[in-house]
Image (cartoon, rainbow over all chains, first blue to last red; front, side):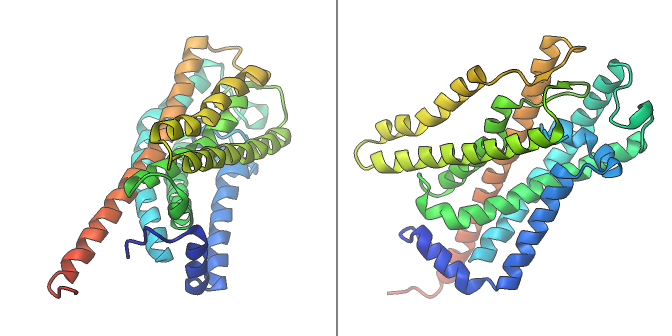
Length: 62
Length: 239
């Protein structure tokens, strides 16, 4: 399984066979939820709580 | 195979997240708190009153740091699975190239126009515009990283040194030109310039360290996995 000679297209092909659409959706949804909570959410309570983190991580949406 | 990469990415993100969480708790939290108090009680809350207790902010920020690294690790694993064949280098080196590309895309390029800011900074633009600008700069960063990798791959068969120069050119050009052409959008009227520089260096180095740690841990896990699979296969020699 060293797979040094395959291409990006091969990887996409394999992934398509391997991952169920619902799983892909779940992974994507989870990622989107984290992004939204950490970076974009402006609701005062969440915003104030994550305040130090956003400053320290150099996040601008703030 | 996809899930092996994804799981390894999350594990690597977890390792980086623990380190970054510790950094948040011991360095970033106290520093941000200090800077806030040093500038007569800067707060985002209306009327100067804080909505949440400081200990809550500290705890949530540590958790946010952990989640952030975990998220980056997961994205790293997924991206590495798909892009591994196209990345230059061999073995773990591919991971480091991807980590550098990720850092360039989502952090460095946006920071060239919208640098990291300490509490109490004065912004020239509103949050919504900054968010859109940040998004645009992430796209630009991704394009630059892709250009670099493609340039390297194209020239690599002829000369490795020349390919490295060609790959580095777009990145260096961006880092030099972009801050020169962009206006100053963030100012710190109440902080000394030295302190702002130190603060920015801390942010850049800590974010860079997350990526480095993710790539290093991922490479280590991959090597260990490869070693395990070869040792379990060795009792029955093929051919």
